[in-house]
Length: 104
Image 1 (cartoon, rainbow, N blue to C red):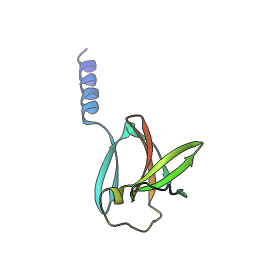
Image 2: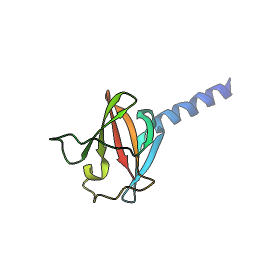
Image 3: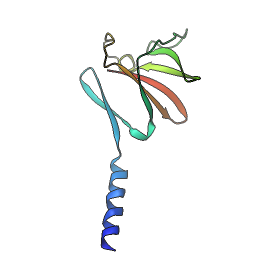
């Protein structure tokens, strides 16, 4: 009986501490709650959308879904950076909205 009590206590602790996907922007480390992450994809062509803020790069078609793409460097007022092999899009769902985040 004592072992199951300890096991449930560990689970509760892990739940409170949470698990995060971490990524970098301009050398700084950030994290997103792992339950909000849908997938991580490589960079792809982004279609620009008129009259959007500069940090909204545009949209992509991901398996029939239209996903808005946000450049987090621009959103956080950092200097833009050339795309590298490590640049990717993290597709997240938060508060019922699905979007892609461009990260280093």
